[in-house]
Length: 129
Image (tube, rainbow, N blue to C red; front, side):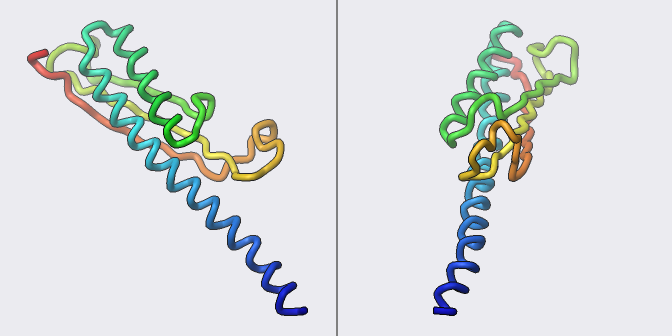
């Protein structure tokens, strides 16, 4: 009886810890992939407005593959020159993602996050497109 009680008492937090770490690890893969794809998509466009929209859409798709919503993420796109799509310009995309605690009721309204992850990717606009 004591063994069963103690096993349950110790295993529940351990299992929750493993699930939370799995969520964070999966989200880290999603953030890195989203930043990388957004930078590649941005430099392949010819119009700055369309480049920004296409990069943001690629981030939404990449994060959705890992089960995260766009509301959990923030995006920052920066360039080292005034014209972001000029040849030789270095474009950096930074994606930040709040990873919520798993299996917490009302976690969205209480803003209980397990971690905040960020990833950056840099691409250089090519001379020939």
